[in-house]
Length: 293
Image (tube, rainbow, N blue to C red; front, side, top):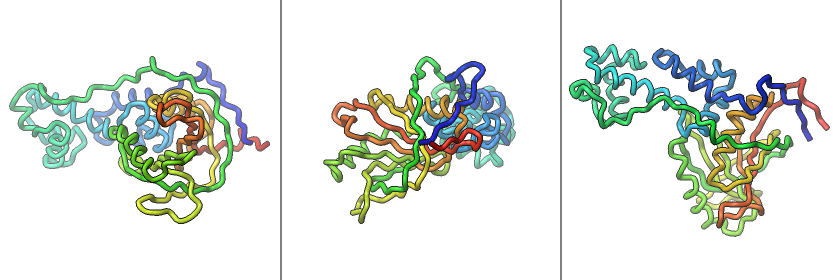
């Protein structure tokens, strides 16, 4: 069993929020076309992986898509105000050419920059306002168990999501039920992917050949912080948010970026969504805080 000493927080846990820091940093600097994910992560004293996960589960958006949307919103407002030089607006928004800016602008709003400038207003555009982190929905979080687990394999169905499209995960579980109807323990495995996306595999532990259309994912031997989400499954994102946005920054531990997973055992009732779910986060411990019992 692994134990650690959580660093003392002057204001007391759980008031630390790296997402609130990230939002403030973005809002004060997003007009800088050179602002990058690395810059925001460094300002929050977090890894790219940790910040990306925390931001996604707290806001339902990927950080870089939010940053681009904020820049394009500012650009739309400038154009509606009569900005005479579209290329200058494009450069200020971080685009190196009129063409690249137009593609991004049309993708965001469905119209060209010229159209918005000619209209002289932003009516009908889905502008992205500055996000404010709602602290009213914070969830109490029990201390996790810290344990090691050997490598194992999960066989299941895999899909790629962004934080904006993650609402499709329950339907993925419904599809899995047709392949493993009697499983007593199932897993939902999250792996980081490019561009703020993530791969989600729902499945069961496997020891032999994996039949089509299931795919196999190998989970390496790792140390984990194991949390328990006691509420309805529809609120599990609140627990993920509490872990990445509040618990990890205050813990003195570091998320390694390896596969994380939800573990659904006999306590969970798939028919009602009640019963609770374990969340396993791979972590590393600083040498001075590590005690092996």
